[in-house]
Image (cartoon, rainbow, N blue to C red; front, side):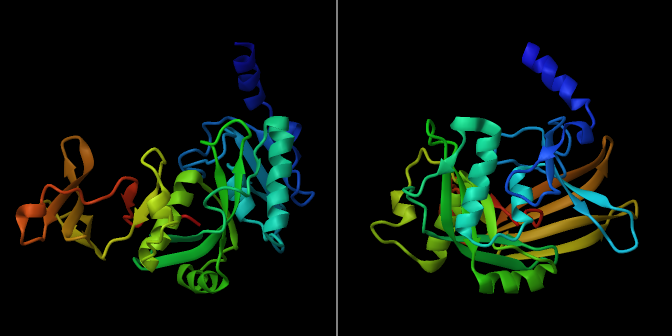
Length: 293
């Protein structure tokens, strides 16, 4: 109970009064632990490190403007916004910060992991409805000495993919990123399926049913449009085609307000496969709102 009270009290202390220098980052970068409920839904929808309430800020100085700050609500978001010299330097930075926060129980590099050195792929749909594929390699695994289930990974994207994706997305993409264990396994499986790798030591053949996987699937085709309702109000509708099925997501007004409905129609002539699952375990359909970068 005392620990809970202390955490609640610390959340009320202004950031400036409790901020500390962020180990391994430029001197102006600072961090503090604040209300863990702030920024969860918008600024950091998923955290891969158990650092609830962590807030990192860096100064942003624009010409002819007063100094401001950019805030990150996860360490991995701050890590991905910095240009690192190489994977060795980046690995030391992650280890230094985690050691500073967690002490001797902090995650450390684990080079013997099965996925280290494996090829990797993230595919997603950008805001313009175009598919973007990011290829790279799993460069580092971080693991706690006591648990193997909390692994996180560092992926290094290929330079040519970064150049193409940056033009497609209209933004700068840095080469290194921290990802979860589920994303690492899913990304390696995604690459092997695209490259049709089925060797004896492939990731697909080596994974067991107990290993959690997150693998995003992009539609074969998608269409966004505004459709007019009976009352004359136009609402958005999204249609996607995936693996022989048509999904239609449509917004509409009802007695309780605005709602979204979805329909799924099989385009297969042979109904013998109707009972088969569209998605494999761990697969998620990208509706255009997922971006791993």
